[in-house]
Image (cartoon, rainbow, N blue to C red):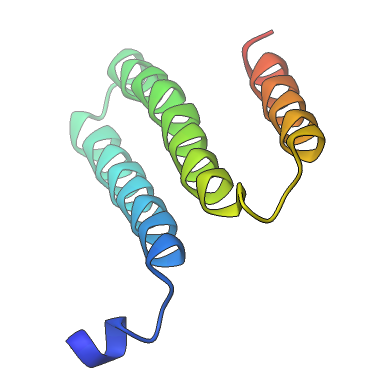
Length: 93
């Protein structure tokens, strides 16, 4: 198993790991909604997911951008940061 994991870049592996964690949280929430079988409780569970998604997004982007800092200029990193900010602004407004 270690040899198989060594084939992947550590940054890509951590980013993918966060996405797998996000998927597990989403699946758990879907199962919880089905088990609760109540619209109000399902909306509450969905509201919690609205917090988890952007956190995973920000963490994944941060890991990726930190690994690219030596390859990208400050101006490009700035524009990428502005793009991420616009995405988050669009989500919350």
